[in-house]
Length: 470
Image (cartoon, rainbow, N blue to C red):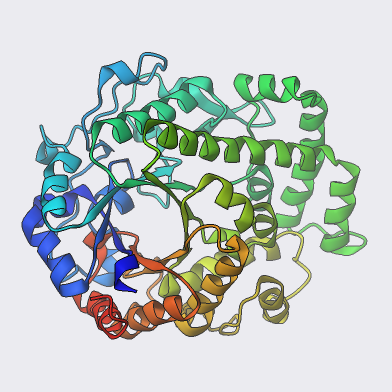
C-alpha cells in the first residue's frame, strides 16, 4: 500500500513565510506523514492563501503566527507576459509586502523534491467570492468589471462570466503558464459555481445572459429571449415562496406547476451546466497537451452530495472523462451546518410546507446519508464512520475503477457558529480509516494547513501509521 501512497495537504503561501519552508515540510512529512503538497497559487480568498479565517471562534492553531493574515490576494507565483497576449487580464500579481519578489512554487519545489514529496498547484473557480473573505469588487484587476455576468433582468452580476471569452482565456493562460513553467506533478482544480437553479432557490436572479453567453446559446439554437421571459415567472414563484405567500395547492405543487409551464428554465440550466463543465474539460486538455504526465485532479464541492439537483447533474462517471483523480469534499465537523444551510433554502421555497424535522429522514434516504436528526446535525456534525465512509464508497462505485478517489478530509475547516461541531483528533483519525476501508486510495487534508491544529493532524498520523502509510 505504501508504494501507492497519496497523503496530501492543502497549504497556503503564508505558512511558508511564517514558519519557513524546511520547518513546514519536515513537520508535515515526519510528524503527519504527508507526501503531497497542494499549494494555493492564485486566489483572493483568505481560506486559500492566508491564515485562519475563523480564529475568533476556533482560536489560533498551535503553529504559525497568531495574527490576522496581511494578504489581500492575487498570484503568488510569477506571471509571464507571453502567456497573456490573448486576454485583457495580464496583471493579477499580489501586492502583499510580505510576499514581495517571492514565488511560492520556486520557494517550495526544490525542498519538496529533496524530500521526495509531490507538488500540485491548487486553483479554485470562482476566484473572487466566498463566505465574506474574497469579493469581486475588492479585487484590483484592471478590466475585471467588464467581464461580469448579466442576470436575466439585464443587471451586471457579482461574479465574472465563465462564458466571457477574455475571462475564460485568462484561466486557460494561467493554467498553461503554471504547468509549463514549474516542475509540478499536477494541478487540482475546484469548480464551485451556483447554477441558475441554485441561484433561484437561494433568492437570487439567475444569469448568465452576458453577450458571450447569449451568443453561444444562440449558436446552439436556444431562444434566449424566451428563456428570459420564463425566468421571470419562475423567479416570481421563488420570491413569493420566500415571502410567505400562500399557494392554492401548496408550495411543492406550485413549484412544479410553474417549472413545467416554463421548461426553458431547465433548458438554460442544462446549457449553463454544460458550459461550466466545458471549462473543466478544456483545462484538463490544456494540462495534458502541455505535459501528458501531469495529473489533473478535481476537487468536488460537497454541495453536490447535499443537494439532489446537483447530485443528478454531476455524476461521478462523467467526471472521470476529464480527470485523473477525484477529491470529494467531506469536511465532517463543519458539514452539519453546510447541510442545514442547503436544506434551509429548500424549506424556504418548494419544501416550505414540510417541517425540516419531518423531511430530514426522507432526505437522508434520498441522498444516501445516515446522520444526526435535524435538531442536532449542526452541533454533532457528520460522523466519519457513516458520512466519510458512505461518500467514499459512493464515489468509488461511481467512478467504476476508472480513476482513484482521494477523500478531502476536513481538519479544522472554518466554523461559522459557536454551537457548530468542533474538529478533534478522533474525528480525523476515524476519517482516515473510513476512507481506506471504503476503497479510497488516498486522503487530502483540507482546506488549509494554516488553520489546522497539529494536535488534530496527530489523529491522521496515528491512523496512517496503523495503515502502514507513515
